[in-house]
Length: 182
Image 1: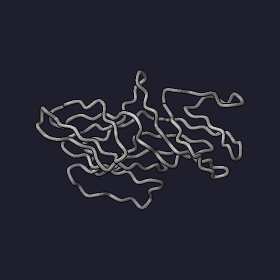
Image 2: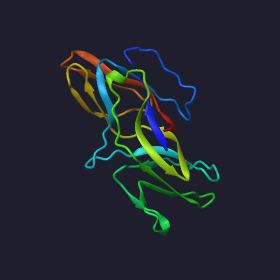
Image 3: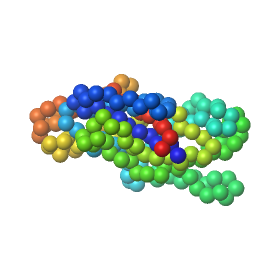
Image 4: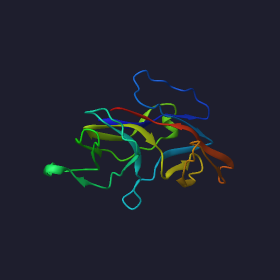
């Protein structure tokens, strides 16, 4: 079981490092006063989690990014059931599958500088080795309850806006993600 986890710094809190982490480290600097930061992931508007995938049999990393939605299911060959992601390695021809087991958990102001698992993924025959935050995220103003429903990151992984009710700039900066064993 793998987890896509996020750690954030709120208003300049210290960075927490974890010697047991694997893959890419996740850190965000969530400025201003926002909370409940998470992907917009509903049945009406599914989030496609973008990953680099590696075959656990031959260790080949697929060159392209793959998208996985927790609301889509695909049949596995041989009537072995369904999964959110079914993939056949081009190198060794083995079939692999992965399923998202949990709905995304929000990163809140109360969890500042602690790692939370955003989603958990059950992988069979493959591993996700890198995550790219394509798509739309959402957050809420901490004191004002202002909704920010369409946060999208550019190449710099930063987002800025202005919370008119609170009268201050809000931001999410320095996002990095970690895929680790759950």
